[in-house]
Length: 278
Image 1 (tube, one colour):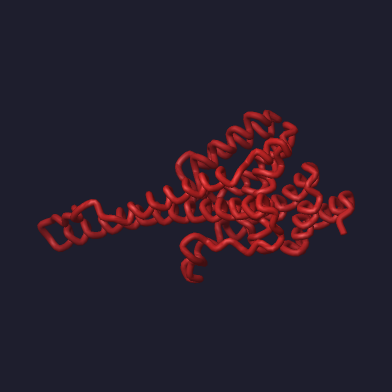
Image 2 (image 1 turned 45 degrees about the horizontal axis):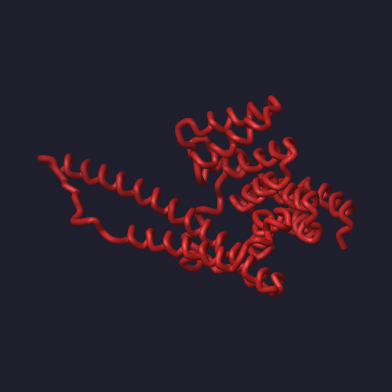
């Protein structure tokens, strides 16, 4: 399914799932202001491309082996810094692209246009080369379990604490802990499952709108991972409960299209029957 559907669903959950009176108060000036904020953020990123002075790297040592050791140490430091910046840039691109898609959707809707004719939002900075994008495609171990060697110190413990709260039916605390986990460890291999579990906790609290947002976050974080079929199904079911029947049917229909071997296909079909999807 094209990114268009996800952007439309995101806009529906963030803006259109609100009461009509609240959504109707938004003006073109509001959207223009949001675009200005995005512009400022892009300018801040551009400033980071400017150097802050001459490089301070100094290689010391009295022997060849000592100097080689210093060079290796400096290379490791620079590699780690590059990976951190690369992760941050990727997060900014993903967030910025989603925000622009949301703004495009709302602009077309406010101007009375046909939102179904919206084109796929172009990724900020252009599409990544295939060789650069390939390593990020696999975030979990082949068995479907997360490789704990990829986790930061305390990452698994924080996730387990949130899960323990959920298992104890402390749903409000679980939702809070899962949200804190995603803020503390952005891009974690456990993020899709954390968002999915947070959605279940919010559903148990009766907060369907926020649950739908959590399911959408889980799916967009890793749309081919082990949690993706469940996240997509739960998103469609939540949209149905929010009264967004057409979007719910489209989303539920994508479960079998994307994951034909998943156990959630039959559940999605049952939900579609209940919603009288055509």
